[in-house]
Image (tube, rainbow, N blue to C red; front, side):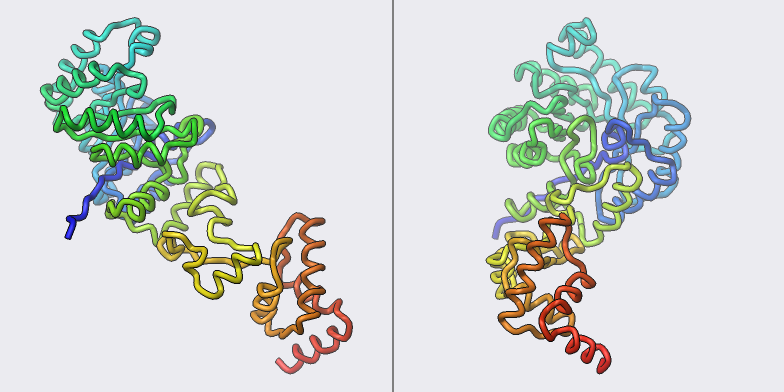
Length: 388
């Protein structure tokens, strides 16, 4: 029997998620989100940027004081002044970020590769001396020269870092290339490697999974994929994809995810799209007649690999333009009404006209009205209500 493989989730909803334009969590919201993430079994949480100021540091201390089971991280530029702000926050790990692509080393910092390596040699030991473990964050790693990346990993490990973060900062990676570069890094280094994906091309989840298959030990996620620009790899997608497609576990239980999802949506002011995978209202909603018929016969006909129960959800059948009479009979049966075949056809016509005009799903009151509009149905409906 093959031994199960486990990957560590380092969720950054409270850091990169909050960096999404216009998003700002209060201290209380940060604490609530951290508590719910911890309750899901997320082993690591990146909770803020100390250099932002005393208010941010206070929020980090507040989360730290909750004594969560998760290991807490902060994000910092690889600079002495930033590192100084990481003291006395109660966190166990800091991501010290530094550009590693020639584009950013030269055009953003006006430096060269040797300077980057010297900074790693200088600042990593300084953080370790503070009692803080270090992840060297390779900003823009996806556009970096591979040979230089190997030098960075070697230098980081020799300086005392436990981990290297491969950041696809501008979201330019694709899964096949991602797996190849990760395999190369893994073959040449035994340091922990963390994948940090951005969704600019819609590939954050695919790139994260590919990185794991290539040898990454840790992955960054955010709730719903919240984050800079198009966002990060969604926590729910990464956990489910690894579990169901590759039998790789994270130790995360999403059965109570709805509460966290609603909390983050409200706190961020970013509602979840109706069609968002796994957690959108439409993710397990079925309308098309052939789908509903198949689902009623056996859920596995149209369920795929994820049971909605895993996310604290359930299949939902709705009536719309593409429904069939089987679904109409089912819906009215749940209302305590039995339809004849001709009645079901008439009501289906009413439903199709209704949704085309109103652009919404009919509710129970609408369905009862359609029934009462049938010839000789109104008196029967009133009789059934009186009998009840």
